[in-house]
Image (cartoon, rainbow, N blue to C red; front, side):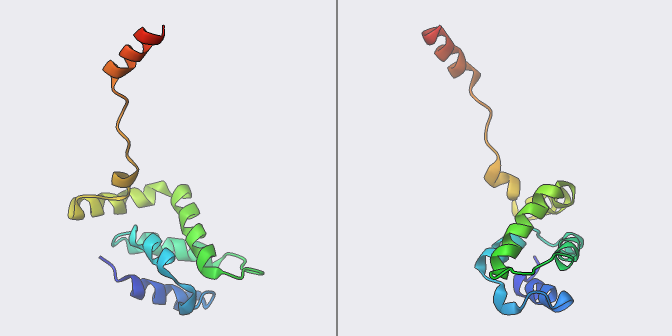
Length: 115
């Protein structure tokens, strides 16, 4: 797995937009979900470097939210990295968010009781 500190330093050195002291635990947690896929991280920080940070006081929080939004906009790039991490670690981002389907037998019982 990528060293998160190295990724953060890489990110901060690329555009000089964000400094190493702006990167906190929340940002590191978000970056950990990328596993070893450097192309996704590179794409993320290319978009981040193009962002207008005028007036942004808390760049760490901005970057954390930016990462979340990027994941929503680019699910295909994350699928390949999360599939790799699932096969190597036994879990991935989907393991935390997957919810089982409702139990059909229980639903039928509820419908029979309530009409």
